[in-house]
Length: 408
Image 1 (cartoon, helix red, strand yellow):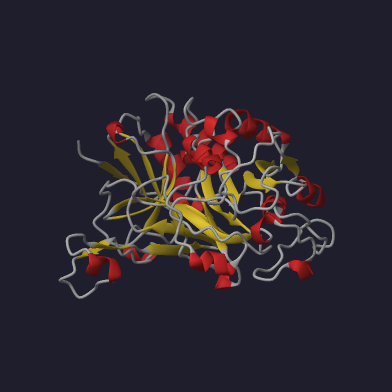
Image 2 (cartoon, rainbow, N blue to C red):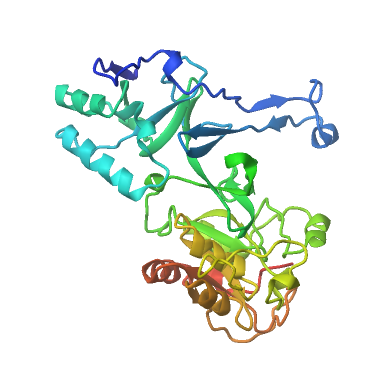
Protein backbone atom coordinates (compact mmCIF):
# COMPACT_ATOMS: atom_id res chain seq x y z
CA UNK A 1 0.00 0.00 0.00
CA UNK A 2 1.50 3.40 -0.94
CA UNK A 3 2.37 6.10 1.57
CA UNK A 4 -0.01 9.04 1.54
CA UNK A 5 1.49 12.53 1.84
CA UNK A 6 -0.61 15.52 2.88
CA UNK A 7 1.19 18.90 2.60
CA UNK A 8 0.04 21.62 4.97
CA UNK A 9 -0.45 25.03 3.38
CA UNK A 10 -0.60 26.83 6.73
CA UNK A 11 2.96 26.05 7.71
CA UNK A 12 5.03 28.16 10.04
CA UNK A 13 6.01 31.64 8.78
CA UNK A 14 9.02 31.99 6.48
CA UNK A 15 9.29 28.25 6.04
CA UNK A 16 8.87 25.92 3.16
CA UNK A 17 9.37 22.22 2.60
CA UNK A 18 12.41 22.93 0.45
CA UNK A 19 15.88 21.71 1.45
CA UNK A 20 16.93 25.13 2.71
CA UNK A 21 14.66 24.87 5.77
CA UNK A 22 15.66 21.35 6.73
CA UNK A 23 18.40 19.89 8.84
CA UNK A 24 21.15 19.23 6.33
CA UNK A 25 23.30 16.87 8.36
CA UNK A 26 24.54 14.29 5.86
CA UNK A 27 24.05 10.65 6.67
CA UNK A 28 26.50 7.95 5.64
CA UNK A 29 24.82 4.53 5.65
CA UNK A 30 26.64 1.39 6.69
CA UNK A 31 29.09 0.33 3.99
CA UNK A 32 30.46 -3.13 3.37
CA UNK A 33 33.80 -3.67 1.68
CA UNK A 34 35.43 -6.98 0.83
CA UNK A 35 39.12 -7.62 1.19
CA UNK A 36 39.54 -6.92 -2.51
CA UNK A 37 38.42 -3.33 -1.94
CA UNK A 38 40.54 -0.40 -0.97
CA UNK A 39 39.48 -0.45 2.70
CA UNK A 40 40.41 -3.40 4.88
CA UNK A 41 41.27 -4.18 8.46
CA UNK A 42 42.98 -7.03 10.28
CA UNK A 43 39.73 -8.95 10.77
CA UNK A 44 38.91 -8.77 7.09
CA UNK A 45 42.44 -9.77 6.17
CA UNK A 46 42.22 -12.84 8.36
CA UNK A 47 38.88 -13.93 6.91
CA UNK A 48 38.62 -13.23 3.21
CA UNK A 49 35.08 -14.55 2.99
CA UNK A 50 33.55 -12.06 5.44
CA UNK A 51 33.00 -8.39 4.53
CA UNK A 52 34.02 -5.52 6.74
CA UNK A 53 31.15 -3.52 8.22
CA UNK A 54 31.91 0.19 8.38
CA UNK A 55 29.69 1.71 11.06
CA UNK A 56 28.76 5.36 11.19
CA UNK A 57 27.38 7.44 14.03
CA UNK A 58 25.89 10.87 13.41
CA UNK A 59 25.61 13.60 16.05
CA UNK A 60 22.88 16.17 15.42
CA UNK A 61 22.23 19.39 17.30
CA UNK A 62 18.76 20.93 17.59
CA UNK A 63 18.92 24.26 19.39
CA UNK A 64 20.76 23.47 22.63
CA UNK A 65 20.04 19.74 22.57
CA UNK A 66 22.22 17.09 20.97
CA UNK A 67 21.13 13.75 19.53
CA UNK A 68 22.82 10.72 18.04
CA UNK A 69 21.66 8.18 15.47
CA UNK A 70 23.29 4.96 14.38
CA UNK A 71 24.18 4.22 10.79
CA UNK A 72 21.45 1.65 10.20
CA UNK A 73 17.83 2.73 10.10
CA UNK A 74 15.22 1.25 12.43
CA UNK A 75 12.51 1.18 9.76
CA UNK A 76 13.16 0.95 6.02
CA UNK A 77 10.31 3.30 5.18
CA UNK A 78 10.97 5.59 2.23
CA UNK A 79 9.15 8.84 2.99
CA UNK A 80 11.39 11.08 0.89
CA UNK A 81 13.92 10.97 -1.92
CA UNK A 82 16.26 13.36 -0.12
CA UNK A 83 19.51 11.99 1.36
CA UNK A 84 19.43 14.72 4.02
CA UNK A 85 18.04 14.25 7.50
CA UNK A 86 14.91 15.88 8.84
CA UNK A 87 12.84 15.49 12.00
CA UNK A 88 9.62 13.53 12.39
CA UNK A 89 7.24 12.45 15.14
CA UNK A 90 5.16 9.29 14.94
CA UNK A 91 1.77 9.30 16.64
CA UNK A 92 -0.17 6.06 17.09
CA UNK A 93 -3.84 7.00 17.60
CA UNK A 94 -6.40 4.47 18.79
CA UNK A 95 -9.31 4.10 16.41
CA UNK A 96 -10.15 6.23 13.41
CA UNK A 97 -12.18 9.03 14.99
CA UNK A 98 -11.41 12.09 17.15
CA UNK A 99 -7.89 12.27 15.75
CA UNK A 100 -7.48 15.93 16.72
CA UNK A 101 -8.24 15.25 20.39
CA UNK A 102 -5.94 12.24 20.40
CA UNK A 103 -3.08 14.22 18.88
CA UNK A 104 -3.47 17.02 21.43
CA UNK A 105 -3.40 14.55 24.33
CA UNK A 106 -0.48 12.64 22.84
CA UNK A 107 1.50 15.84 22.27
CA UNK A 108 1.01 16.86 25.90
CA UNK A 109 1.98 13.36 27.07
CA UNK A 110 5.12 13.39 24.93
CA UNK A 111 6.21 16.71 26.43
CA UNK A 112 5.61 15.54 30.00
CA UNK A 113 6.91 11.98 29.77
CA UNK A 114 9.82 12.05 27.35
CA UNK A 115 13.04 14.06 27.66
CA UNK A 116 14.12 13.08 24.14
CA UNK A 117 11.09 14.53 22.34
CA UNK A 118 10.88 18.25 21.68
CA UNK A 119 8.79 20.39 19.34
CA UNK A 120 11.66 20.47 16.84
CA UNK A 121 10.58 16.94 15.89
CA UNK A 122 7.21 18.22 14.65
CA UNK A 123 8.49 19.31 11.22
CA UNK A 124 6.81 16.20 9.88
CA UNK A 125 4.18 13.94 11.44
CA UNK A 126 3.53 10.26 10.77
CA UNK A 127 0.18 8.59 11.52
CA UNK A 128 -1.62 5.45 10.40
CA UNK A 129 -3.48 5.47 7.09
CA UNK A 130 -6.61 4.44 9.01
CA UNK A 131 -6.74 7.85 10.72
CA UNK A 132 -9.21 10.43 9.44
CA UNK A 133 -7.21 13.56 8.63
CA UNK A 134 -9.72 16.39 8.37
CA UNK A 135 -9.33 20.16 8.25
CA UNK A 136 -9.28 20.47 12.06
CA UNK A 137 -6.35 18.06 12.25
CA UNK A 138 -4.48 19.92 9.53
CA UNK A 139 -5.02 23.25 11.28
CA UNK A 140 -3.74 21.80 14.56
CA UNK A 141 -0.59 20.38 13.00
CA UNK A 142 0.03 23.60 11.06
CA UNK A 143 -0.13 25.52 14.34
CA UNK A 144 2.66 23.25 15.61
CA UNK A 145 4.80 24.16 12.59
CA UNK A 146 4.27 20.85 10.80
CA UNK A 147 5.03 20.93 7.07
CA UNK A 148 3.57 17.60 5.99
CA UNK A 149 1.61 14.59 7.27
CA UNK A 150 2.63 11.09 6.25
CA UNK A 151 0.01 8.36 6.46
CA UNK A 152 1.64 4.96 6.63
CA UNK A 153 -0.06 1.54 6.35
CA UNK A 154 -0.85 0.33 9.86
CA UNK A 155 0.94 -2.94 9.09
CA UNK A 156 4.30 -1.15 9.37
CA UNK A 157 3.93 -0.97 13.18
CA UNK A 158 6.19 2.03 13.68
CA UNK A 159 6.56 2.81 17.39
CA UNK A 160 5.51 6.27 18.61
CA UNK A 161 8.07 8.95 19.35
CA UNK A 162 10.72 11.17 17.74
CA UNK A 163 12.75 10.12 14.69
CA UNK A 164 15.15 11.44 12.11
CA UNK A 165 14.42 10.36 8.56
CA UNK A 166 15.91 10.47 5.08
CA UNK A 167 15.64 8.44 1.89
CA UNK A 168 17.24 5.54 3.78
CA UNK A 169 14.43 5.26 6.35
CA UNK A 170 13.56 6.16 9.95
CA UNK A 171 16.24 6.47 12.63
CA UNK A 172 15.51 6.43 16.35
CA UNK A 173 16.66 9.59 18.11
CA UNK A 174 18.91 9.07 21.13
CA UNK A 175 19.48 12.19 23.18
CA UNK A 176 22.99 12.96 24.39
CA UNK A 177 23.59 14.24 27.92
CA UNK A 178 26.98 15.38 29.26
CA UNK A 179 28.50 13.56 32.22
CA UNK A 180 29.71 16.71 33.94
CA UNK A 181 29.99 14.94 37.32
CA UNK A 182 32.52 12.41 35.95
CA UNK A 183 30.42 9.52 37.22
CA UNK A 184 30.64 7.39 34.06
CA UNK A 185 33.61 5.48 32.72
CA UNK A 186 32.05 4.88 29.31
CA UNK A 187 28.75 5.25 27.47
CA UNK A 188 27.12 2.28 25.74
CA UNK A 189 24.50 1.71 23.08
CA UNK A 190 22.89 -1.55 21.85
CA UNK A 191 24.40 -3.15 18.78
CA UNK A 192 22.50 -2.83 15.51
CA UNK A 193 22.71 -6.60 15.07
CA UNK A 194 21.89 -7.95 18.55
CA UNK A 195 20.08 -5.88 21.22
CA UNK A 196 21.78 -7.98 23.92
CA UNK A 197 25.23 -7.04 22.60
CA UNK A 198 26.50 -3.54 23.32
CA UNK A 199 29.25 -1.29 22.04
CA UNK A 200 30.89 1.93 23.15
CA UNK A 201 29.14 5.08 22.02
CA UNK A 202 31.50 6.72 19.53
CA UNK A 203 30.03 10.20 19.77
CA UNK A 204 30.60 13.45 21.62
CA UNK A 205 28.91 16.83 21.86
CA UNK A 206 28.94 20.07 23.88
CA UNK A 207 32.55 20.76 22.94
CA UNK A 208 33.62 17.31 24.17
CA UNK A 209 34.40 18.76 27.61
CA UNK A 210 33.11 15.56 29.21
CA UNK A 211 31.91 12.08 28.35
CA UNK A 212 28.48 12.01 26.73
CA UNK A 213 25.77 9.46 27.55
CA UNK A 214 22.97 8.64 25.09
CA UNK A 215 19.46 7.67 26.21
CA UNK A 216 16.54 6.39 24.10
CA UNK A 217 13.07 7.87 23.94
CA UNK A 218 10.73 6.63 26.66
CA UNK A 219 7.84 6.67 24.19
CA UNK A 220 9.05 3.62 22.27
CA UNK A 221 9.04 1.31 25.28
CA UNK A 222 6.00 -0.93 25.65
CA UNK A 223 5.90 -2.77 28.96
CA UNK A 224 4.74 -6.35 28.51
CA UNK A 225 4.47 -9.26 30.90
CA UNK A 226 7.77 -10.60 29.58
CA UNK A 227 9.39 -7.13 29.49
CA UNK A 228 8.22 -5.31 32.64
CA UNK A 229 11.32 -3.07 32.70
CA UNK A 230 11.06 -2.05 29.04
CA UNK A 231 12.68 1.31 28.43
CA UNK A 232 14.16 1.65 31.92
CA UNK A 233 17.55 3.39 31.70
CA UNK A 234 20.16 1.59 33.76
CA UNK A 235 23.88 2.08 34.36
CA UNK A 236 26.14 -0.65 35.72
CA UNK A 237 29.26 -0.60 37.87
CA UNK A 238 32.51 -1.36 36.03
CA UNK A 239 32.81 -4.70 37.83
CA UNK A 240 29.98 -6.22 35.78
CA UNK A 241 30.47 -7.78 32.37
CA UNK A 242 28.46 -6.41 29.45
CA UNK A 243 28.66 -8.39 26.23
CA UNK A 244 30.66 -6.49 23.61
CA UNK A 245 32.19 -3.99 26.08
CA UNK A 246 35.42 -4.09 28.08
CA UNK A 247 35.38 -4.64 31.84
CA UNK A 248 38.03 -2.53 33.54
CA UNK A 249 37.34 -2.93 37.27
CA UNK A 250 38.47 0.65 37.75
CA UNK A 251 41.99 -0.29 36.62
CA UNK A 252 43.48 0.80 33.30
CA UNK A 253 46.00 -2.07 33.10
CA UNK A 254 43.29 -4.68 33.65
CA UNK A 255 41.19 -3.11 30.93
CA UNK A 256 44.06 -3.10 28.42
CA UNK A 257 44.98 -6.73 29.12
CA UNK A 258 41.49 -8.13 28.55
CA UNK A 259 39.34 -8.32 25.45
CA UNK A 260 35.76 -7.10 25.32
CA UNK A 261 33.41 -9.36 27.27
CA UNK A 262 31.86 -12.20 25.29
CA UNK A 263 28.97 -12.63 27.72
CA UNK A 264 27.12 -10.44 30.19
CA UNK A 265 27.11 -11.05 33.92
CA UNK A 266 23.98 -12.86 35.00
CA UNK A 267 22.77 -9.83 36.97
CA UNK A 268 23.13 -7.69 33.84
CA UNK A 269 21.59 -10.32 31.58
CA UNK A 270 18.53 -10.32 33.84
CA UNK A 271 18.14 -6.59 33.22
CA UNK A 272 18.37 -7.11 29.45
CA UNK A 273 15.92 -10.01 29.50
CA UNK A 274 13.41 -7.84 31.37
CA UNK A 275 13.70 -5.04 28.78
CA UNK A 276 16.09 -2.63 30.50
CA UNK A 277 18.55 -0.49 28.51
CA UNK A 278 22.18 -0.25 29.65
CA UNK A 279 23.33 3.32 28.98
CA UNK A 280 26.84 3.07 30.38
CA UNK A 281 29.32 1.86 32.97
CA UNK A 282 29.95 3.85 36.12
CA UNK A 283 33.27 4.40 37.85
CA UNK A 284 34.41 2.22 40.70
CA UNK A 285 37.31 1.98 43.10
CA UNK A 286 39.91 -0.48 41.77
CA UNK A 287 38.49 -4.02 41.99
CA UNK A 288 35.79 -2.88 44.39
CA UNK A 289 38.24 -2.30 47.22
CA UNK A 290 38.10 0.19 50.08
CA UNK A 291 39.48 3.52 48.85
CA UNK A 292 37.40 6.23 50.47
CA UNK A 293 38.87 9.64 49.62
CA UNK A 294 39.97 11.45 46.47
CA UNK A 295 43.66 10.79 47.12
CA UNK A 296 43.09 7.01 47.01
CA UNK A 297 41.94 7.11 43.38
CA UNK A 298 44.81 6.60 40.93
CA UNK A 299 43.71 5.49 37.46
CA UNK A 300 40.51 7.51 37.14
CA UNK A 301 39.21 10.72 38.64
CA UNK A 302 36.90 10.63 41.63
CA UNK A 303 33.20 11.23 40.75
CA UNK A 304 31.77 14.51 42.01
CA UNK A 305 29.00 14.40 44.60
CA UNK A 306 26.22 16.77 43.56
CA UNK A 307 24.97 17.09 47.15
CA UNK A 308 26.09 19.82 49.49
CA UNK A 309 28.89 21.98 48.13
CA UNK A 310 29.69 19.46 45.38
CA UNK A 311 32.88 18.21 47.00
CA UNK A 312 31.57 15.90 49.73
CA UNK A 313 33.30 12.51 49.68
CA UNK A 314 31.21 9.81 48.03
CA UNK A 315 32.73 6.83 49.92
CA UNK A 316 32.49 3.21 48.85
CA UNK A 317 33.33 1.43 45.61
CA UNK A 318 29.87 1.99 44.07
CA UNK A 319 30.24 5.76 44.32
CA UNK A 320 29.97 6.17 40.52
CA UNK A 321 26.60 4.43 40.56
CA UNK A 322 25.38 6.69 43.36
CA UNK A 323 26.87 9.90 41.95
CA UNK A 324 25.21 9.39 38.56
CA UNK A 325 21.78 8.86 40.09
CA UNK A 326 22.08 11.86 42.37
CA UNK A 327 23.06 14.13 39.48
CA UNK A 328 21.08 12.97 36.45
CA UNK A 329 17.25 12.80 36.38
CA UNK A 330 17.41 10.98 33.02
CA UNK A 331 18.81 7.87 34.75
CA UNK A 332 16.47 5.43 36.52
CA UNK A 333 18.50 2.68 38.24
CA UNK A 334 22.15 1.71 38.68
CA UNK A 335 23.68 -1.65 39.57
CA UNK A 336 26.41 -1.87 42.18
CA UNK A 337 28.14 -4.37 44.44
CA UNK A 338 28.42 -4.46 48.21
CA UNK A 339 30.62 -6.43 50.60
CA UNK A 340 30.98 -4.11 53.57
CA UNK A 341 28.92 -1.08 52.60
CA UNK A 342 29.88 -0.31 49.00
CA UNK A 343 26.23 0.32 48.06
CA UNK A 344 24.89 1.50 51.39
CA UNK A 345 27.59 4.07 52.17
CA UNK A 346 27.47 5.85 48.76
CA UNK A 347 23.67 5.86 48.96
CA UNK A 348 23.85 7.78 52.24
CA UNK A 349 26.53 10.17 50.99
CA UNK A 350 24.61 10.99 47.78
CA UNK A 351 21.09 11.03 49.20
CA UNK A 352 19.68 8.14 47.15
CA UNK A 353 18.21 4.74 47.93
CA UNK A 354 20.54 1.73 48.06
CA UNK A 355 19.58 -1.94 48.36
CA UNK A 356 21.94 -4.80 49.16
CA UNK A 357 20.17 -8.19 49.06
CA UNK A 358 21.06 -10.79 51.67
CA UNK A 359 22.67 -14.03 50.51
CA UNK A 360 23.70 -17.39 51.90
CA UNK A 361 27.38 -16.60 52.30
CA UNK A 362 28.66 -19.27 49.91
CA UNK A 363 32.09 -18.70 48.41
CA UNK A 364 31.78 -17.87 44.70
CA UNK A 365 34.68 -19.00 42.46
CA UNK A 366 36.43 -16.94 39.77
CA UNK A 367 35.57 -13.57 41.28
CA UNK A 368 38.39 -11.01 41.40
CA UNK A 369 36.94 -8.87 44.18
CA UNK A 370 37.76 -8.60 47.89
CA UNK A 371 35.71 -10.61 50.37
CA UNK A 372 34.09 -12.80 47.73
CA UNK A 373 32.11 -14.65 50.38
CA UNK A 374 30.37 -11.38 51.33
CA UNK A 375 30.18 -9.65 47.97
CA UNK A 376 26.77 -9.44 46.34
CA UNK A 377 25.19 -7.29 43.67
CA UNK A 378 22.46 -4.79 44.44
CA UNK A 379 20.97 -1.63 43.03
CA UNK A 380 20.42 2.06 43.70
CA UNK A 381 17.56 4.36 42.79
CA UNK A 382 16.30 7.89 43.25
CA UNK A 383 12.69 7.07 44.14
CA UNK A 384 11.14 4.35 46.27
CA UNK A 385 8.58 3.63 43.55
CA UNK A 386 11.25 2.94 40.93
CA UNK A 387 13.20 0.84 43.43
CA UNK A 388 10.11 -1.25 44.14
CA UNK A 389 9.30 -1.68 40.46
CA UNK A 390 12.83 -2.73 39.56
CA UNK A 391 13.43 -4.96 42.57
CA UNK A 392 10.12 -6.77 42.30
CA UNK A 393 11.08 -8.07 38.86
CA UNK A 394 14.88 -8.22 38.91
CA UNK A 395 15.12 -10.10 42.21
CA UNK A 396 12.70 -12.76 40.94
CA UNK A 397 14.81 -13.78 37.94
CA UNK A 398 16.89 -16.95 38.43
CA UNK A 399 20.08 -15.33 37.16
CA UNK A 400 19.98 -12.56 39.75
CA UNK A 401 20.65 -15.17 42.43
CA UNK A 402 24.13 -15.71 40.98
CA UNK A 403 25.18 -12.32 42.24
CA UNK A 404 28.87 -13.19 42.35
CA UNK A 405 29.25 -13.64 38.61
CA UNK A 406 30.79 -10.22 38.24
CA UNK A 407 34.38 -10.82 37.22
CA UNK A 408 35.97 -13.84 35.60
